[in-house]
Image (cartoon, rainbow, N blue to C red; front, side, top):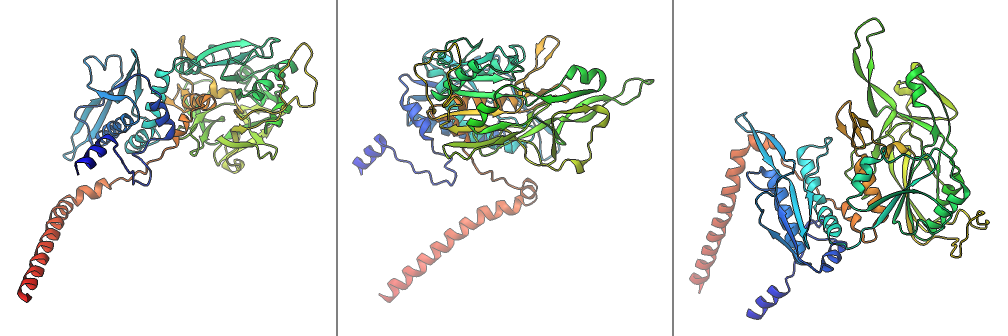
Length: 523
């Protein structure tokens, strides 16, 4: 028994018998923790007088850290004085049984320390489309990924580089300021135009092509193509049509024509085609419209702007799992083409069940916009597609463009990934009074849509070689009590919970006595 006790202490064994494996770590997390060469200290700031939901979140956090300590040098430390400075607290409003409202302030954060470096992770997800219990459950699901990604970022000695492509009328630095700032937490972010150097993109983990307005030359296409062939990853955010927003705001109408970027043949080889269409959707953003008439005082009312669809996110992908709807404007659609078994295609963003598309050339006339549901009969039109596999070169059996020299040309790519989005507006942030607004933020309603999470997750997925992004697929079943029924039947539930165990123990004791009496009387 002593030897078994010593062995159990030195080599602890645990079996996770839960259906959703909520107490088990993923293999990428175990490999990450096993490779740490210095201890990791974690301060959990979520403490104090917590309600049952936040106590469950804290308990899940502590249990996760305890499980991580079994695979690496991870330790939970006491909260230091002043640790909450600079952090925005969360205020919880709860209604008690007597009808009074209680207010509690909590800090749903954890600080991670490693080799003198420090980072802060947010434990609580706040999706306005979900209830408080659902948000807490989603937060618990996401804990392993949040901690693993933070430890991975703080423990690495080199930082991967990504680049925004320039030179073809792409979104400028101010237009993608918020996205760049968010990505700078994980990568070194550069910008630049292509030169005659075929290997110019080799140092970059991911290249982002953000809404070009001018056609790409054959030289630039070849450099991008060979970048993909050698394992490069590209996020394509491309518009399918061209229109004038200035003309639309001044005259109320604008022509819509196809946007020719000289990329159709290249993307077709990779397995997708961006259509020259314009999407309308009844599930859309709203804009303030003056309904008072010319003579009266301005009276603004929110009206649906069907050319700004709110895109649905795929629940089965780690890129879009638990991500809110993604806002967009003047969006096109994507078709998947080709039947190559070497390329896996996954739709990440799509329109709602009440949408329609118009093929360019066409026009937008604000006086003729149809919002009658009978015209919106299309459903789930693809807007973003993730591609993974081995891609054929767009320049297979073709001459190298003039002015380029390439001694390492490939006709087929190594295993790699790409993401194609048929709207550059997904990355676009606006400015207000000289300050950048978050990407996906609607300043008229104050709602933050999921653009930021989608873009950051997409780039992390493209750059991921360790499999950490797959941890976001973890799902924990939400099993909630009926609060109203629980309060109404509180006395009955408490009585049953106390009396039934005592009754069972009593019956067991009586049965033992009867058996003993019979046994010894007969003997």
